[in-house]
Image (cartoon, rainbow, N blue to C red):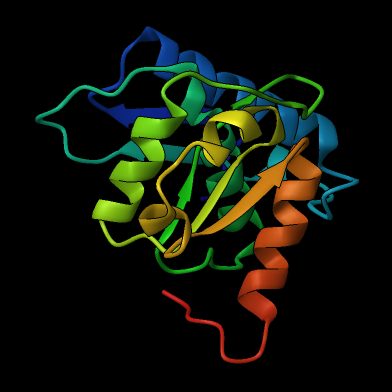
Length: 164
């Protein structure tokens, strides 16, 4: 929405979830020219809402998802349908490994997700997943926010891609 280039979070988000959103927003502002956002982050506010307010959200592993959601909003380009994302993002745009990847990817599979973007440094945990899970998910390992945005955009722009 038009504004002064500030971040607002709503929903039931804990301190680490707020920190993840703050870092995601800062990296979007810092990398705006490279990500093709120009001055958008300075002229428009970003409002990230953590849905399902009955259950609190917390954790740094939501940082990459928040950054991709912000990029999607600023670029006005939808993310792929049935996309799940995990990974801590740093101020420089690096994607750090996270804990609980096995549980997160099994949960993504059980919820009907089709694409999962995750930290490349979690490949060992991903390799240990049951074939039933890995056979149904398109698993995309990334090292940076820029790389994640490129592969997500390529997925959306691919012929026959499912959009929201």
